[in-house]
Length: 259
Image (cartoon, rainbow, N blue to C red; front, side, top):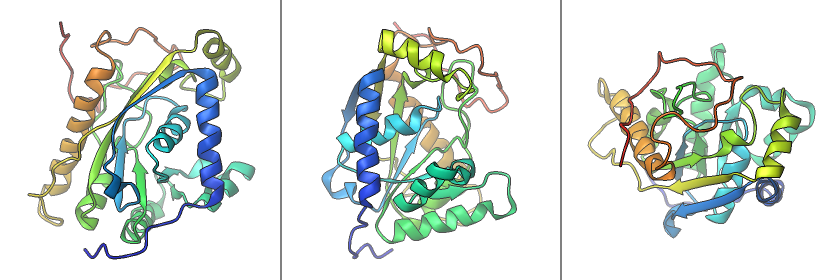
């Protein structure tokens, strides 16, 4: 893949949104961002693969990416794009619509591949949904992010986050005011760590099983990156959201208790 191109320039509305996200996160929580995206990767092409534990995740990641001086195009659920105001803002910011379960869902991967080829950093949730693992470890991933990486040849950086589940409940906007009120009073710590790129160099697109192998490596890397963020919560998290359903059908692996 030829990466000789002009870097993607994020629209002003997205830069402003990242600044606002940093303000919102700072008001509701204590944000700790660790790790580092190498300077030569920040402008793309780049795939950021993040775990998904809360409706608050996109705001946290927008703020954390601002700290890293990167403005990724986000692959987000089509419901956001259908919202009257938010949808227009998402489109103007250059984010990519994913209509899960729809016939045209594969268009999102084509759009993302085009964006990566044009030099943009992309943020994806390889699990494909807010995780329902009872211990909030990354679930078995969907293969879309891996197929995108194998097709485009862009590096994949795992982005682990922990603590956003203490800010907004799973069923937000239901329970939104209560969650925000508790967060304002307690200001939980939200941690985000940018890990080392995932090695996928031995895998080739189109090879049988390559997409699943790449997906498992990405989820493994996310799990490994998450471990240091929750050293005192190796199994079930302290904060349990009663509104979150439990589904173990997509459990990837369990982490044993440490220490």
